[in-house]
Length: 365
Image (cartoon, rainbow, N blue to C red):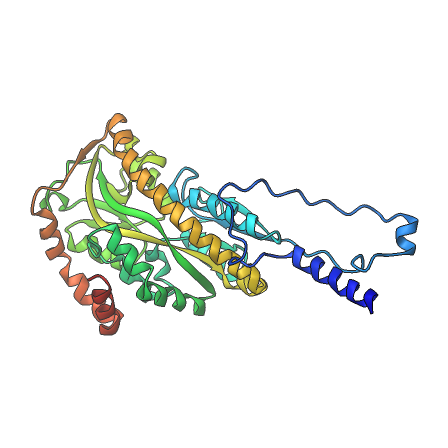
């Protein structure tokens, strides 16, 4: 009986050490030491072969590879979020190895979403506008001038309304875990300073490939041109488009200041960027692994948002030093822009449904 009890105890310890610790019992350290390398076990000696230990016949837990990546530059806040995620998950879970790919190495937003659906890419963060091609209602967060400040955005996105939209993704083969931050979007161009709504008239502005973005910039008087982000610098350089709109972090890391003279801090859209996991990969994980992934994504979200805020603080200084002219909208002009895009709310509010729009309005109070 004592031998049987010892055998059961050895097996339990062996299996427990091989997987992920429950996140409620073993919080991830802030500065984990590097994970030890895994090497093949040494061949057993004759005496070991003759008298195997009770745990020797148990297979070692396999290590899953989780490839995560996006179009963001390595120095951008979302990419820094990836490295935080890697740190937290690998400290918590020894059965998952995270590989980070930045700068569009895994493809553009469309290719990344397709890779998540197929399971060839295991994780990413993508702005809500491209995701709306799969789940149209998540595009509601791309409405212009929707959020007045980040605190309101966080309250909505981290609350029931945001969770509903994440839950809707599972039907498309993607698991949405939480909202990271791409940031406030601002306008740049090579033609003239933009201080009024009238200054936008006739400019060719690159936009994300999303109907709501095209309609918004049409309503603002520009000629919107959908282009993939990877093509944007060349399009600006060759004057295919006059300008573009992006978070400041993208303007800095992609060196748009080399081909754009004017930046207006319009803050016309808060760009949320959900952290996504392939459902194919998610379903291959144990409950403990899934819990560890979610816990790491939430911890990394908080780090990433701080990084995004710091990114904005330093960007204007960097761009001014690089020779860009930075302007604010004149008083009252943002209200004129809001009035100009009201038809967008009417059109897409009907598309998203009264129930969602009412929930959104209530959550922002």
